Length: 237
Image 1: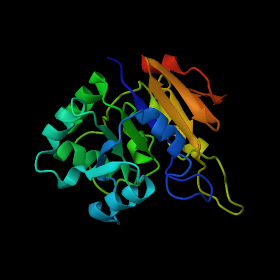
Image 2: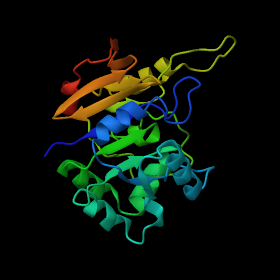
Image 3: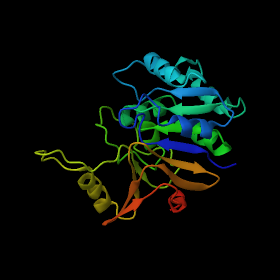
């Protein structure tokens, strides 16, 4: 069985409603599945109950259960594939998301379930953790997970919300400059920057870009990627 993973850059594109741009990708990815386990752990300034309700409102066709409400979330993830469920992992703070997954001992169960074929959908922080580590997140390290190592569904780094925009008069580093710092120290590790409105799709042992364009950083090189590009080389190192 191969992994079936949708990595959305963001929950919104432009001024659209919450998850509106992602709905076609989400329902194509889900197929006939409508029973969803939602992981709200990236939420910090929103309660996990409120976050779950927000996703329910955006996806009313689905039965959304917050993983935090279950007495045994590990067993729920282990049983999800057989129960014909999918897992959604929302955005927020990547460090808090990863720290909580480690705290609840959910990293290995998630890897095992997705390897069996459990459909996984993430956005923002929920996509960031699909790479090998979270070292190219845009978030502040407001808490310290035991490791930066993440789910490694793809063998590269991911940078959601990618943009190299520099406002007039702004003298801080651009996103490209920050990612250049990473690739200077890790010249053999690729980084996939996905713009808002875009997604990476892993299915049938192939990786491709959906939606708008993105950027590949590797060492000193930067290369554009476009919708439909075959990115399967980044499934292996």
